[in-house]
Length: 388
Image 1 (tube, rainbow, N blue to C red):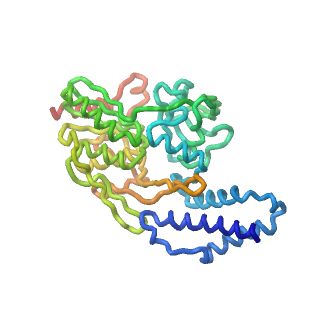
Image 2: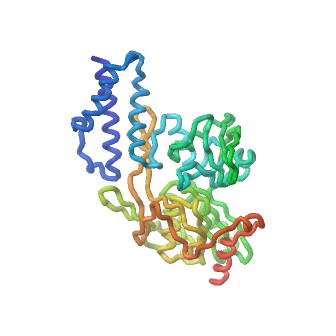
Image 3: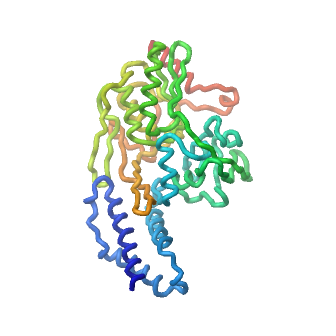
């Protein structure tokens, strides 16, 4: 009887967690209890396993409960939702602060569902090992990445500095994957990289959005003000996104008022994310660069600047990740990363699955890459000069 009660208790916890999370921003959406027929069926299945499984005395209840949670997450058919054990949840939090143990690569899941390298970070173990943009990561330590969510795949690669990870990599244009054994290191990177171009034009690249990105942007703009910057090129190419509040902070530096984005939950409840006061450069000439790997928080900023007519968006259509996700930690230290809402641009455009269409579509060809020529950046420079 005690074993049966324990399984029922575990089931109740799982059910309550899912009911709470499915409510999104408003938990009143569901008024479901474990007495509903759907949950009776789940409890019935658990009891069958307990009563009839040949090795029922050896059942690992902890493993069984986690398997149930994982199954529910997978049934959502959402590549961004995931279940993380306690260790992986802890690792995930480091990257949100701007540092983590890993090999130093930006990743995405392409339109075919394959885990793909956006770019290795300069000076990291991944770059030194020969990982290239466009590489497909087929496996990690002998485990396939097929069907893995983004966060699951990322956390398979991350780990303690000094430990090794083996990746099965398929380079673009090749048919046979190769194995790479890479030693992890402490990855501590600035998310805002700024430099001055001729004519006092600032080129500001944002690699991703951590909790530090807003303050890093302010510091970069303050430093450039000393040099008398005449215009700014904001570069979100290959930026996979990150923390939403950092996206609002960055957009607010270039706008004086209005809405950055609207957040809408499953019931239609809406929150307007307003421009924060005190933007440093709401009037300077501005151009924004994006590409097909610009996603999530980078699309929030690009969409806001485009809708406000702040400056032209130049490049290629963005990825189209228009959902908001949140960690919900469970009592054992594990967590569920779940999609809780969708966001819309100030003009209420939904970009989920669609992306942001640039004002000027400019491709970069293979010949451009070989010659070290960046037509998107050159067009942005030309635009800024025209404004001067």
